[in-house]
Length: 132
Ligand code: CMP
Image (cartoon, rainbow, N blue to C red):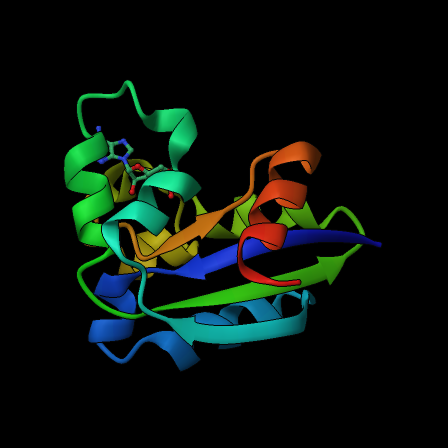
C-alpha cells in the first residue's frame, strides 16, 4: 500500500468540480484516506513548490495556488503514485490523454485542476506538508 498527495487546485474548486474529481479518483480504485479544504497564502504555496523556485513561472504559479481554496487529499493504494499520475494526465491539458482528469477539466498548463506527487520522497514531503 502506497500513499500519495492529491491537490484539487483553485480553478477546479472554484468551478465546483471537487466532487467530480473525487468521483474519478474513487472510480479508479484509489482510496481517500484524509482530506481537507484550505486556503494557501503565498508563503505556504512557495514552500510546497520550492523545487520549482528557479522556474520562470514560479511567481505566477504560487499566486494562482493562493488565489482560492484548494482541497488536499491523501490517496492510498497499490502503486498509488503512478496510478494517480496516470489518471491525472500530462501537465498541459492539450497533451493529456483522453479520459484523464486534466483532459476533462484542466484549463491550461498552469490552471491544470490537480496536482499529484511524482515519487515516494515527494509524496512523503507533500503529505506531511498538509497532514500530521
Ligand atoms: P503540478 O503538477 O502541480 O506541478 C507544478 C505546476 O506548475 C504544474 O502542475 C502547473 O500548474 C505549473 N506549471 C508547469 N509548467 C508550467 C508552465 N510552463 N507555465 C505555467 N505553469 C506551469
